[in-house]
Length: 94
Image 1 (tube, helix red, strand yellow):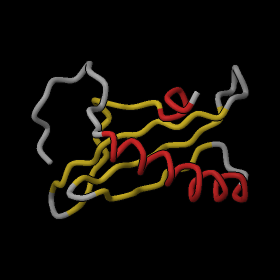
Image 2: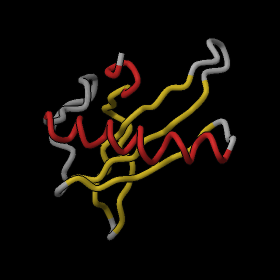
Image 3: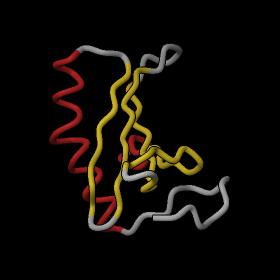
């Protein structure tokens, strides 16, 4: 997908994409994250034509787990994380 909207806005997602990201986070990413015992891990998932990177990290100040979702752009025959827009998945789950 091309970078066709300005930064400064939340990542635009359909209800289906939000639900799929929540399921992937809960069922796949969290168990692996807890097993690895790393402070900062990245996961990727393709939903339809779109690719997303999920960054799970432990906030040093609050000691709470956070997950930030970014869309990836197809560039030079590879997916590249686009950090201009994000969705903080864990805030949406509350």
